[in-house]
Image (cartoon, rainbow, N blue to C red; front, side, top):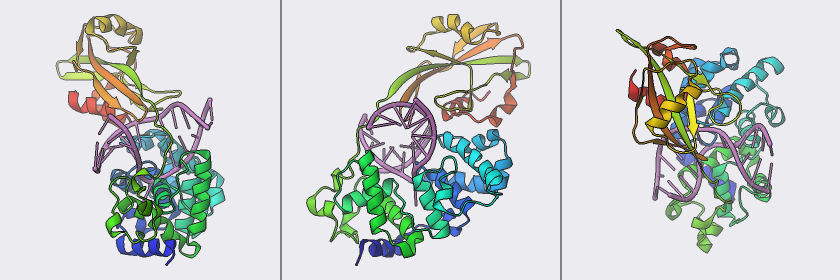
Length: 349
DNA sequence: AAGCCGGGGTA
DNA sequence: TACCCAGGCTT
């Protein structure tokens, strides 16, 4: 039996029941694919359910404010996906008359849709014979065919795409594509794959040669940069309690683009209160502080894939009103990074 | 070709 | 800790 036939048989026996498997509406499939980029099914599923509930159609999504889209996306990470999602929805409405593109080539023109996503949508929704190559597919093919070309090298990307096209089942592409990914996620896992009861075990090169734990090969890891964040939380309080604070929107390049955060003082090392009581003025130019208190004595370490953020939160109490005051009761309306959301939750305002 | 961009789960 | 997750975009 061929590789693809075994994958298909395995899939029909083992596929999970997932919300986006109930439909072939390209809008819904696209939504699921963007959400699942570099994201586990378990983490992405609640977001998929919320997005499809709030935005039933691509036009609903296109007509929303980016702020609302980012708020719904809050906590998922890689926020360019959300910004591109919104932009692509507008493209579908403005450039494709509200009708979702129905082939690989046109899908590629959408912001945030690359080779993988265009292949997934076109095959799942329109039965177009395009082979998907995601992290699961790299792993399954590298092991089964014993390929040690680095999967993230230019050569590897081309090689595995060609190999994937060679071994795919064009006639059953919809199930085959989902099947090989599901197989990688459930059976041929990164660590401790279930080789003992694997339907491909009698012809898997990596298993035969004892290379299962060495494949796939991936080029180097990204080095992590340390950064030191001091969030200055302006606090205007009256007899009723804390009334106002301030949030700024992150603009330009870098992390968390278009999300909101408290006024930020970045430093070259962890700061002590003496340094903050002097330097806070550079950030809060218009605010006269009555008192500065540290919220967390030990810096919180927030870990991104490529940066470690050593973060202290400083409470800056003032007796005067100031510019850009935000009523604290509205603070949850803003899309914020998890680091900020965690503080808001802990501080309780 | 290499770097950038999150947050969380797993062993 | 280190690695990975239904990747794509920018430089």
